[in-house]
Length: 362
View 1 (tube, one colour):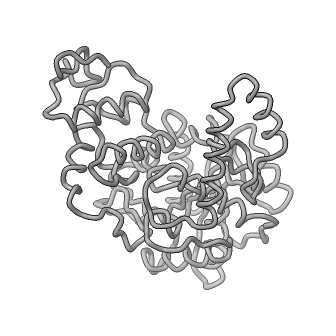
View 2 (cartoon, one colour; view 1 turned 90 degrees about the vertical axis):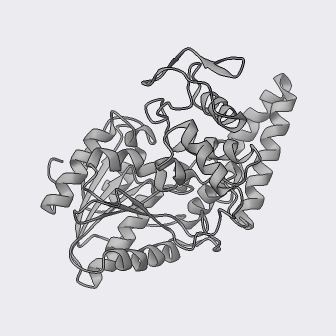
Protein backbone atom coordinates (compact mmCIF):
# COMPACT_ATOMS: atom_id res chain seq x y z
CA UNK A 1 0.00 0.00 0.00
CA UNK A 2 1.19 3.50 -0.81
CA UNK A 3 -0.08 6.48 1.17
CA UNK A 4 -0.01 9.93 -0.43
CA UNK A 5 -1.57 12.86 1.45
CA UNK A 6 -4.00 10.54 3.19
CA UNK A 7 -5.16 8.84 -0.01
CA UNK A 8 -4.71 5.21 -0.92
CA UNK A 9 -2.86 5.17 -4.21
CA UNK A 10 -3.10 2.36 -6.71
CA UNK A 11 -5.78 -0.04 -7.85
CA UNK A 12 -8.20 -1.29 -5.22
CA UNK A 13 -8.87 -5.04 -5.46
CA UNK A 14 -12.16 -5.33 -7.32
CA UNK A 15 -13.39 -1.80 -6.59
CA UNK A 16 -11.55 0.36 -9.13
CA UNK A 17 -9.19 3.16 -8.10
CA UNK A 18 -8.74 3.38 -4.35
CA UNK A 19 -10.68 6.15 -2.64
CA UNK A 20 -9.40 8.32 0.17
CA UNK A 21 -10.16 6.94 3.66
CA UNK A 22 -12.87 8.93 5.39
CA UNK A 23 -10.87 9.47 8.57
CA UNK A 24 -7.77 8.39 10.49
CA UNK A 25 -9.46 5.29 11.88
CA UNK A 26 -10.37 3.99 8.44
CA UNK A 27 -6.84 4.71 7.25
CA UNK A 28 -5.32 2.91 10.27
CA UNK A 29 -7.53 -0.14 9.78
CA UNK A 30 -6.70 -0.29 6.06
CA UNK A 31 -2.97 -0.17 6.80
CA UNK A 32 -3.32 -2.88 9.48
CA UNK A 33 -5.25 -5.13 7.10
CA UNK A 34 -2.62 -4.68 4.39
CA UNK A 35 0.17 -5.55 6.82
CA UNK A 36 -1.54 -8.66 8.21
CA UNK A 37 -2.47 -9.96 4.76
CA UNK A 38 0.91 -9.08 3.30
CA UNK A 39 -0.37 -7.10 0.32
CA UNK A 40 0.95 -3.82 -1.01
CA UNK A 41 -2.23 -2.47 -2.57
CA UNK A 42 -5.39 -2.45 -0.47
CA UNK A 43 -8.22 0.07 -0.31
CA UNK A 44 -10.82 0.70 2.42
CA UNK A 45 -13.59 -0.89 0.34
CA UNK A 46 -11.65 -3.99 -0.72
CA UNK A 47 -12.99 -7.47 0.00
CA UNK A 48 -10.70 -9.01 2.63
CA UNK A 49 -11.90 -12.48 1.73
CA UNK A 50 -10.73 -12.06 -1.83
CA UNK A 51 -7.45 -10.67 -0.48
CA UNK A 52 -6.71 -13.97 1.29
CA UNK A 53 -8.24 -13.64 4.77
CA UNK A 54 -8.35 -16.95 6.67
CA UNK A 55 -8.94 -18.05 10.27
CA UNK A 56 -5.31 -17.57 11.35
CA UNK A 57 -5.03 -14.12 9.76
CA UNK A 58 -8.42 -13.25 11.28
CA UNK A 59 -7.12 -13.81 14.82
CA UNK A 60 -4.08 -11.62 14.18
CA UNK A 61 -6.16 -8.98 12.41
CA UNK A 62 -8.70 -8.79 15.25
CA UNK A 63 -5.91 -8.35 17.78
CA UNK A 64 -4.25 -5.62 15.70
CA UNK A 65 -7.56 -3.79 15.27
CA UNK A 66 -8.18 -3.95 19.01
CA UNK A 67 -4.75 -2.39 19.58
CA UNK A 68 -5.79 0.76 17.69
CA UNK A 69 -7.38 2.07 20.88
CA UNK A 70 -11.06 1.94 19.91
CA UNK A 71 -11.86 -1.06 22.05
CA UNK A 72 -12.09 -4.80 21.52
CA UNK A 73 -12.78 -6.34 18.15
CA UNK A 74 -14.14 -9.88 17.93
CA UNK A 75 -12.77 -12.28 15.31
CA UNK A 76 -16.19 -13.54 14.27
CA UNK A 77 -17.24 -9.98 13.38
CA UNK A 78 -15.09 -10.44 10.27
CA UNK A 79 -17.77 -12.75 8.92
CA UNK A 80 -19.92 -9.64 8.37
CA UNK A 81 -17.24 -6.93 8.20
CA UNK A 82 -15.66 -7.88 4.90
CA UNK A 83 -13.71 -4.64 4.26
CA UNK A 84 -11.42 -2.29 6.21
CA UNK A 85 -14.21 0.29 6.07
CA UNK A 86 -16.63 -2.22 7.58
CA UNK A 87 -14.22 -2.95 10.42
CA UNK A 88 -13.78 0.77 11.09
CA UNK A 89 -17.55 1.25 11.18
CA UNK A 90 -17.95 -1.48 13.78
CA UNK A 91 -15.13 -0.12 15.91
CA UNK A 92 -16.86 3.26 15.96
CA UNK A 93 -20.19 1.70 16.88
CA UNK A 94 -18.69 -0.44 19.65
CA UNK A 95 -16.46 2.27 21.10
CA UNK A 96 -18.82 3.08 23.98
CA UNK A 97 -19.89 -0.40 24.98
CA UNK A 98 -18.23 -3.54 26.29
CA UNK A 99 -17.91 -5.95 23.39
CA UNK A 100 -17.23 -9.00 25.51
CA UNK A 101 -20.77 -9.43 26.84
CA UNK A 102 -21.71 -12.48 24.80
CA UNK A 103 -23.58 -15.07 26.83
CA UNK A 104 -23.78 -17.76 24.17
CA UNK A 105 -21.20 -19.92 22.44
CA UNK A 106 -23.42 -20.10 19.34
CA UNK A 107 -22.64 -18.18 16.15
CA UNK A 108 -24.98 -18.49 13.17
CA UNK A 109 -23.65 -18.46 9.62
CA UNK A 110 -26.17 -18.03 6.79
CA UNK A 111 -28.85 -17.36 9.44
CA UNK A 112 -31.56 -16.60 6.86
CA UNK A 113 -31.25 -20.00 5.20
CA UNK A 114 -34.33 -22.22 5.16
CA UNK A 115 -32.65 -25.63 5.03
CA UNK A 116 -32.12 -27.94 8.00
CA UNK A 117 -29.06 -26.52 9.81
CA UNK A 118 -25.63 -28.08 10.04
CA UNK A 119 -23.90 -27.89 13.44
CA UNK A 120 -20.16 -27.08 13.26
CA UNK A 121 -17.53 -27.31 16.00
CA UNK A 122 -14.20 -25.50 15.48
CA UNK A 123 -10.84 -26.79 16.61
CA UNK A 124 -8.93 -25.90 19.77
CA UNK A 125 -8.46 -22.15 19.95
CA UNK A 126 -10.61 -21.82 16.85
CA UNK A 127 -13.68 -19.70 16.28
CA UNK A 128 -16.79 -19.80 14.12
CA UNK A 129 -14.76 -17.89 11.54
CA UNK A 130 -12.95 -21.10 10.59
CA UNK A 131 -16.18 -22.27 8.90
CA UNK A 132 -16.95 -18.99 7.12
CA UNK A 133 -15.62 -20.12 3.72
CA UNK A 134 -17.40 -23.47 4.07
CA UNK A 135 -20.67 -21.70 4.84
CA UNK A 136 -20.20 -19.60 1.70
CA UNK A 137 -19.50 -22.71 -0.37
CA UNK A 138 -22.62 -24.44 0.97
CA UNK A 139 -24.77 -21.48 -0.12
CA UNK A 140 -26.85 -18.80 1.54
CA UNK A 141 -29.82 -21.13 2.01
CA UNK A 142 -27.83 -23.56 4.19
CA UNK A 143 -27.60 -22.41 7.84
CA UNK A 144 -24.45 -23.42 9.69
CA UNK A 145 -24.58 -23.14 13.48
CA UNK A 146 -21.08 -22.97 14.97
CA UNK A 147 -20.59 -23.88 18.63
CA UNK A 148 -17.45 -22.27 20.03
CA UNK A 149 -15.67 -23.45 23.17
CA UNK A 150 -16.79 -21.99 26.48
CA UNK A 151 -14.68 -19.00 27.42
CA UNK A 152 -13.24 -18.21 24.00
CA UNK A 153 -15.66 -15.33 23.45
CA UNK A 154 -17.81 -15.60 26.58
CA UNK A 155 -17.20 -14.87 30.24
CA UNK A 156 -17.09 -18.54 31.21
CA UNK A 157 -14.33 -20.74 32.56
CA UNK A 158 -13.04 -23.12 29.89
CA UNK A 159 -14.00 -26.78 29.86
CA UNK A 160 -10.83 -28.72 30.54
CA UNK A 161 -11.84 -32.29 29.74
CA UNK A 162 -13.14 -33.82 26.55
CA UNK A 163 -16.15 -35.10 28.47
CA UNK A 164 -17.08 -31.59 29.62
CA UNK A 165 -16.53 -30.15 26.13
CA UNK A 166 -18.70 -32.83 24.51
CA UNK A 167 -21.43 -32.62 27.17
CA UNK A 168 -21.74 -28.86 26.69
CA UNK A 169 -21.69 -29.12 22.88
CA UNK A 170 -24.28 -31.93 22.93
CA UNK A 171 -26.61 -29.88 25.13
CA UNK A 172 -26.20 -26.85 22.87
CA UNK A 173 -26.80 -28.96 19.76
CA UNK A 174 -30.05 -30.23 21.26
CA UNK A 175 -31.11 -26.63 21.93
CA UNK A 176 -30.42 -25.38 18.40
CA UNK A 177 -31.63 -28.55 16.60
CA UNK A 178 -34.17 -30.01 19.04
CA UNK A 179 -35.49 -32.84 16.87
CA UNK A 180 -35.01 -34.73 13.63
CA UNK A 181 -31.72 -35.79 12.02
CA UNK A 182 -28.57 -33.95 13.06
CA UNK A 183 -25.59 -33.30 10.81
CA UNK A 184 -22.41 -32.52 12.72
CA UNK A 185 -19.09 -31.33 11.32
CA UNK A 186 -15.90 -30.67 13.24
CA UNK A 187 -12.40 -29.53 12.32
CA UNK A 188 -9.24 -30.65 14.13
CA UNK A 189 -10.07 -31.07 17.85
CA UNK A 190 -13.60 -30.04 16.90
CA UNK A 191 -13.83 -33.30 14.95
CA UNK A 192 -13.12 -35.27 18.12
CA UNK A 193 -15.67 -33.24 20.09
CA UNK A 194 -18.23 -33.69 17.32
CA UNK A 195 -17.58 -37.46 17.40
CA UNK A 196 -18.34 -37.55 21.12
CA UNK A 197 -21.41 -35.34 20.63
CA UNK A 198 -22.61 -37.82 18.00
CA UNK A 199 -22.13 -40.66 20.48
CA UNK A 200 -24.29 -38.86 23.04
CA UNK A 201 -27.06 -37.93 20.63
CA UNK A 202 -27.11 -41.35 19.01
CA UNK A 203 -27.53 -42.95 22.44
CA UNK A 204 -30.78 -40.98 22.86
CA UNK A 205 -32.16 -42.30 19.58
CA UNK A 206 -31.35 -39.29 17.40
CA UNK A 207 -30.28 -39.90 13.82
CA UNK A 208 -26.77 -38.49 13.54
CA UNK A 209 -24.52 -37.84 10.54
CA UNK A 210 -20.95 -36.78 11.14
CA UNK A 211 -18.22 -35.32 8.96
CA UNK A 212 -14.82 -34.91 10.64
CA UNK A 213 -12.35 -32.65 8.88
CA UNK A 214 -8.72 -33.57 9.56
CA UNK A 215 -9.62 -34.59 13.11
CA UNK A 216 -6.72 -34.78 15.57
CA UNK A 217 -6.23 -37.70 17.99
CA UNK A 218 -2.65 -36.95 19.06
CA UNK A 219 -2.28 -33.90 21.36
CA UNK A 220 1.05 -33.15 19.64
CA UNK A 221 -0.97 -32.36 16.52
CA UNK A 222 -2.34 -29.23 18.20
CA UNK A 223 0.40 -26.67 17.63
CA UNK A 224 0.90 -23.19 18.95
CA UNK A 225 2.45 -20.86 16.40
CA UNK A 226 4.23 -18.62 18.88
CA UNK A 227 6.01 -21.35 20.84
CA UNK A 228 6.20 -24.15 18.29
CA UNK A 229 5.08 -27.76 18.85
CA UNK A 230 4.30 -28.23 22.51
CA UNK A 231 3.46 -30.99 24.93
CA UNK A 232 -0.05 -31.08 26.41
CA UNK A 233 1.33 -29.46 29.55
CA UNK A 234 2.23 -26.41 27.50
CA UNK A 235 5.98 -26.90 27.88
CA UNK A 236 7.99 -26.74 24.65
CA UNK A 237 9.42 -30.07 23.52
CA UNK A 238 13.14 -30.62 24.06
CA UNK A 239 13.83 -30.42 20.35
CA UNK A 240 12.21 -26.99 20.28
CA UNK A 241 14.36 -25.84 23.18
CA UNK A 242 17.53 -27.11 21.51
CA UNK A 243 16.69 -25.35 18.26
CA UNK A 244 15.82 -22.20 20.21
CA UNK A 245 19.16 -22.35 22.02
CA UNK A 246 21.03 -22.62 18.73
CA UNK A 247 18.99 -19.75 17.33
CA UNK A 248 19.89 -17.66 20.39
CA UNK A 249 23.49 -17.53 19.23
CA UNK A 250 22.31 -15.86 16.04
CA UNK A 251 19.40 -13.87 17.48
CA UNK A 252 19.27 -13.50 21.29
CA UNK A 253 16.37 -11.06 21.09
CA UNK A 254 14.32 -13.59 19.13
CA UNK A 255 14.87 -16.21 21.84
CA UNK A 256 13.82 -13.78 24.57
CA UNK A 257 10.64 -12.94 22.70
CA UNK A 258 9.84 -16.64 22.21
CA UNK A 259 10.42 -17.45 25.86
CA UNK A 260 8.31 -14.51 27.05
CA UNK A 261 5.51 -15.46 24.66
CA UNK A 262 5.67 -19.08 25.79
CA UNK A 263 5.49 -18.03 29.42
CA UNK A 264 2.47 -15.83 28.75
CA UNK A 265 0.69 -18.66 26.96
CA UNK A 266 1.31 -21.06 29.85
CA UNK A 267 -0.08 -18.52 32.31
CA UNK A 268 -3.17 -18.14 30.13
CA UNK A 269 -3.59 -21.93 30.08
CA UNK A 270 -4.03 -21.86 33.85
CA UNK A 271 -5.92 -18.57 34.07
CA UNK A 272 -7.41 -17.53 30.70
CA UNK A 273 -9.21 -14.55 32.23
CA UNK A 274 -12.03 -12.70 30.45
CA UNK A 275 -12.10 -12.51 26.65
CA UNK A 276 -9.68 -9.97 25.23
CA UNK A 277 -9.07 -11.06 21.66
CA UNK A 278 -5.33 -11.48 22.26
CA UNK A 279 -3.52 -14.08 20.18
CA UNK A 280 -1.86 -15.37 23.34
CA UNK A 281 -5.25 -16.23 24.78
CA UNK A 282 -6.31 -18.13 21.65
CA UNK A 283 -3.05 -20.07 21.78
CA UNK A 284 -3.75 -20.98 25.40
CA UNK A 285 -7.02 -22.59 24.31
CA UNK A 286 -5.05 -24.71 21.82
CA UNK A 287 -3.00 -26.13 24.68
CA UNK A 288 -6.11 -26.61 26.83
CA UNK A 289 -7.50 -28.69 23.98
CA UNK A 290 -4.29 -30.72 23.85
CA UNK A 291 -4.62 -31.53 27.53
CA UNK A 292 -8.25 -32.55 27.06
CA UNK A 293 -7.58 -35.27 24.45
CA UNK A 294 -4.51 -36.77 26.09
CA UNK A 295 -5.05 -40.54 26.23
CA UNK A 296 -8.38 -40.38 24.37
CA UNK A 297 -9.47 -43.40 22.34
CA UNK A 298 -12.85 -43.31 20.57
CA UNK A 299 -15.47 -46.00 21.00
CA UNK A 300 -16.96 -47.64 17.92
CA UNK A 301 -19.59 -45.47 16.23
CA UNK A 302 -23.27 -46.32 15.89
CA UNK A 303 -23.78 -43.57 13.33
CA UNK A 304 -22.52 -42.56 9.89
CA UNK A 305 -18.99 -41.10 9.93
CA UNK A 306 -16.97 -39.58 7.11
CA UNK A 307 -13.43 -38.41 7.85
CA UNK A 308 -12.06 -35.92 5.32
CA UNK A 309 -8.33 -35.60 5.83
CA UNK A 310 -5.27 -34.26 4.08
CA UNK A 311 -2.90 -36.67 2.36
CA UNK A 312 -0.16 -36.48 5.01
CA UNK A 313 -2.44 -36.69 8.07
CA UNK A 314 -1.14 -39.09 10.71
CA UNK A 315 -4.50 -38.65 12.42
CA UNK A 316 -6.17 -40.53 9.56
CA UNK A 317 -4.06 -43.60 10.35
CA UNK A 318 -4.83 -43.24 14.05
CA UNK A 319 -8.57 -43.21 13.40
CA UNK A 320 -8.42 -46.10 10.92
CA UNK A 321 -6.56 -48.25 13.46
CA UNK A 322 -9.09 -47.47 16.18
CA UNK A 323 -12.60 -47.43 14.71
CA UNK A 324 -14.40 -48.42 11.52
CA UNK A 325 -15.25 -45.34 9.46
CA UNK A 326 -15.20 -44.04 5.90
CA UNK A 327 -12.36 -41.71 4.96
CA UNK A 328 -11.40 -39.65 1.96
CA UNK A 329 -8.40 -37.51 1.07
CA UNK A 330 -9.02 -33.81 0.39
CA UNK A 331 -6.50 -31.25 -0.90
CA UNK A 332 -4.68 -28.68 1.20
CA UNK A 333 -3.07 -28.68 4.62
CA UNK A 334 -4.63 -28.68 8.09
CA UNK A 335 -5.84 -25.08 7.71
CA UNK A 336 -6.16 -24.48 3.97
CA UNK A 337 -8.49 -27.47 3.68
CA UNK A 338 -11.22 -25.01 4.73
CA UNK A 339 -10.11 -22.28 2.31
CA UNK A 340 -10.69 -21.85 -1.43
CA UNK A 341 -10.20 -23.69 -3.65
CA UNK A 342 -9.96 -26.75 -1.38
CA UNK A 343 -13.14 -25.97 0.55
CA UNK A 344 -15.28 -26.56 -2.55
CA UNK A 345 -14.65 -30.31 -2.38
CA UNK A 346 -15.22 -30.34 1.39
CA UNK A 347 -18.55 -28.56 0.88
CA UNK A 348 -19.53 -31.10 -1.77
CA UNK A 349 -18.86 -34.01 0.59
CA UNK A 350 -20.61 -32.31 3.51
CA UNK A 351 -23.63 -31.59 1.32
CA UNK A 352 -23.81 -35.24 0.23
CA UNK A 353 -23.81 -36.46 3.83
CA UNK A 354 -26.29 -33.80 4.94
CA UNK A 355 -28.74 -34.46 2.10
CA UNK A 356 -28.40 -38.23 1.75
CA UNK A 357 -27.57 -39.34 5.27
CA UNK A 358 -24.39 -41.22 4.44
CA UNK A 359 -20.75 -40.72 3.40
CA UNK A 360 -21.68 -40.42 -0.27
CA UNK A 361 -18.90 -39.79 -2.72
CA UNK A 362 -16.19 -40.98 -0.34
